[in-house]
Length: 463
Image (cartoon, rainbow, N blue to C red):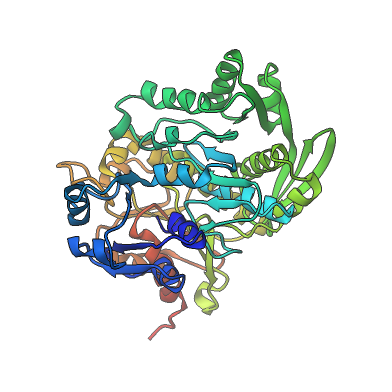
C-alpha cells in the first residue's frame, strides 16, 4: 500500500490513510505530504478535509468490517483493491510483471536495479524495500513499469502485462484456491492476459513453469525460457534465451556465467544461492526484452545489494565467545523457500569453512503449517540446530490441535527446540551458538524482530 501511495504522491494526488501502528514507511509518506492517522476510525475518511474520491485497500489483510470501509460504502465511495489501483497506475507504460510462487520480490528488485543501471529509469512497485534505493516504489521517467504480480488471491489477473515473468509454480495459498489444480490454472489465465505482442518468460528449471510455457506456446503466445544448461536440454521446444552455464558460491556471494544473445556474460551477486542466480537470469532476460543493453544490465545485477528481509545481513559478533558469528534475516515462509535459503547458507558456510548453521523459524498461517508440516521439517533439517516459534496466524484464527510441534517432531537436526515464548528465543540461541556460526531468522511474521535481539544477546559479555 505504501508503494502505490508513493507513486500517487509523486504524480500530484492527495493521499490520506491509516494504519495500526507507526512505521518507517509511514514517516516517509508523511514527509512526502500524505496525511496518515494511527488507528482505524470512520472519521479518518476526512483526514484530507474532504471525502476521498476513492478508497484503496488490501482485501486479504483488511477485514470488511473495518470502520473506514464501512463508512466508505455508506457514503457511496468506490473501494478498490490495491491491484486495481496499481493496474490504473501502469496504464500507458510498458508493463513488466513478475509472478511466481517464490522469488517475486527478489526478481522484481533485480530487474529494477538492472534497468536503472541501463539508464531506463523504470517506475516500479515491489513487495520489499530495495537496500540500495531504500524504497519500495518509484515514479520513473522511463517508458517501463516493473511490478510484482501477487497470485495469492488471484488479483494479478487485473494486470495487462507486456512482459510477464513466471519464476516457478508450486502449490500454495490453498486456503484461498481450494485445490492445486485451481492454483496452477490461474497462471495460465495470467499468461492469457498478455497482449498480441506480449512476451512470456518462464524458468526452465521449474517443471511447472516450463509446462506453463509449453501450453502458452501452443496457444500462440511468444515464450522465452531461461535456466541452466541441463534444464534447457530437458525442454528443447522452448528457446533458452538466458542460459546459466555455471555458478559458484564463495565467501563474497555467487558468481555466475550466463549466455545471452550469443555471448557470454559474468554476473557477481552479493547474495548466495542457486535460486538467486536463476532470479538474476530472469531479470537479465526481462530487461533485455524491454530494450536494455546487456552489459549495463549485468553491471546493475552485480551492483544489486539485496532487498530487505531477503538473506538480509544484520551484523557480525565480536564477543570472543561467539567471534565471527553472523545474523541474517529472511522472509522465507514456504518449504521450498526455506530449503533454498538454508541451502545457500550451508554453501556459504562451507566456502568460508565456518561454524554451525542455526535456523530460527516461525511458521506462517495454520493452513500452510498443516499442508506442509513434513516439507518444512525436511527443509529445516538442513540446519545443524533449529528453534521453532509458535505459528504466526496473520489473517487466520487459531486451529485446535495445530501447533508448531507438527514441524518440530519431524525435524532431523542435532538440536531442535520448540519455543512458544517469543522473549526466550534469543537466550535459546545464545545457549547453542558458537564462533563462526551463521544464524538465520526465517519467516513472514514477527520473527524478523528477533534478528537484532539475537545479535545483541550474542554481543553481551558474561556477568
